[in-house]
Image (cartoon, rainbow, N blue to C red; front, top):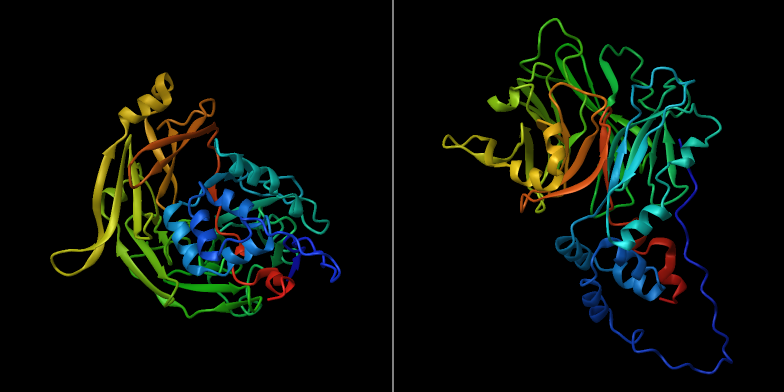
Length: 430
């Protein structure tokens, strides 16, 4: 495996000649770090903060050296959605045929958010132009500012890639399995059941987790950025699996605050993995989530609480983990909100073209939805919307044909604003 390219470096500081006469310090540069960070807390978005912090090394160091400021800024300013990645219209079957994800930016009036998109590599040209890879890529997951992809030619060397579109030329290629898996392995290792594990406290690091299963067991394999190796975890028996079926789990990238979820194909049970303890558990889905017409996804509220958001027709519900009267923790309904009236205002006459909502993803207190018709019509593109789980207010994003998987790309805290990244502190003489 190898990392190609590196994040953009700061311009080299110009050394001041000893003979140069002293200059008058501007009022802005005389501000203390505490005052400066209080001003930065009042900026409208993360994209604006990044542009301001990168204006000079002193400001960048003030922001990067304060974990307390980072946490407070995230509390006051939700991570902004930049757009959605869409998988190729059909599964990558022939690596010789070009197939590549597409990106649609969200409609935003914030100029700094627009500048972040324009300055990034959301066409993923760094892997499109790779001379040793087939021109067919599929997105497996998208979170923490990273995009996890798999090449159509799984037999090639290092067919998996992780890319940060906001940092040009910073891709990482690696193998898709542990070298020992093929020896004596009888399980079903599906590259589709791969996801990113990211940390708010260390945005420069990530892990990749893949789920394997056979007729009666599951196991996790984890790729670490630090070791550049896959780690195999033990097999675990699970109950309730369908008989006479080797592939009994749906592909999924559902994740909420350190927990991963996979639903049985019979829609009766769900496997949960705690990524801190690496313990698996299985529980029965709530009855109304077992309805195949019910669309749902897992994520977290703005406060980080685990949640499931579901949609039935034009009603959206939120479920939280709570303890029942018997002392058993389970998924319980928190609220269900009809969105018919809001959709009338957002879509106007076009609402009549649809009869249901689909839950695309849930991230950081927002659910991303798509309008749909129960009888699929390729000539009728979907409207993509965001729903704030705190206020239950809808916002229209864009219209597009929904014929493949979609992955929201949310701007997260950049690695260059954490710690002593790039040694800029040393260049300042500190």
